[in-house]
Image 1 (cartoon, rainbow, N blue to C red):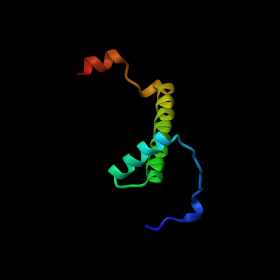
Image 2: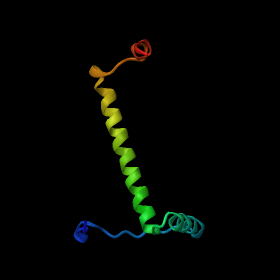
Image 3: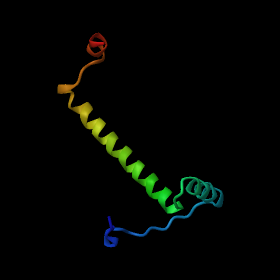
Image 4: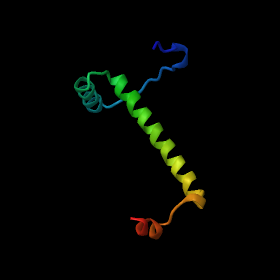
Amino acid sequence: MKQDKDNYKRIKITLHSQKYQAMWINAVNNKTSVAGIVRSLIFECLEDEEDIREGKKALKEKDNAMDWGTFKRSL
């Protein structure tokens, strides 16, 4: 599937040389690029934030939630 380049933005980051070297080694070991590693890390971070938001929303909506005592008795 060809990606639409207009939907991407270029960013520039600065890393300490030791951090870059560690990322480069990680990229080589995973047969990808340093940019690929950075994209994966950003994607994971955004997914985690989404999961946290959904979890907080679920905690506010306790109508369908089961309390700990009920859960333990159901086992």
